[in-house]
Image (tube, rainbow, N blue to C red; front, side, top):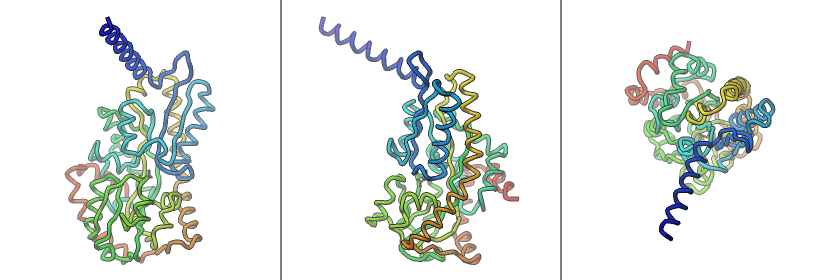
Length: 335
Ligand code: LMR
């Protein structure tokens, strides 16, 4: 009898769990659809602003039907965990940096190739090309459907010594995002790469677990990396941007009118956010300079050319993974 009771309770629990997962995010009589949207940067960054704007517009235009909960600054989970959480339906929307999709597909490695994209306009042209757009749904079978791209900005190096030339990076421990290309890039300049979650970087720099890092001005400023980096070098050697992504099962289960409206809002917010990303980064750079806590070095054309020459072999190393066609489309966007 007791055994039967336990069996019965277990069956009910499993049925409830299955029901909850199936109805996850769907509108029910009990209330609106919930979109949980965790991300790792501060609210005042390009991604933080875009996520908040998305919430604001959704809750205005789909009032009572959709609620968006934005969790900034890694307060809910790391980017790596959010990829799993999205696939399992624990969260409904994410915007992880393109570099972190490395574990799902190699095609996105194109965004990490050093000095491939000189500026955000070139990246935008590539993302709008057939090759770029085809990346959006290239991971649908892995529980991730891209809706749009958001910019952060160009990356700069930071370290304990002035690094006008790559030789100065020799032997330094660099934090990199979870990307094999970025790991290879640091090896190319003689550094020691350490893959690490964004939320751990400040402390790692402070305690000396790593010496150096690369990131955008807005991230270096808002996460206070400049407080624990004596020198910041304006190299613009790479890019940080995001894939705004949803779980395809969740997305396809939405009532059609809601899905269409959400998609339109994502596209509208993308234009708005991408327009202001560069100025948010410039502002971060200016604040760092004014703080006087870190010296910002501007490099000469010859110095930058030396960085490019030393890092360039990384392209060939990853060409097979990425695909020549994808790299050719990126090069065509350079004009
Ligand atoms: C990083 O880990 O450095 C970035 O991906 C953080 C971000 O989301 O901009």
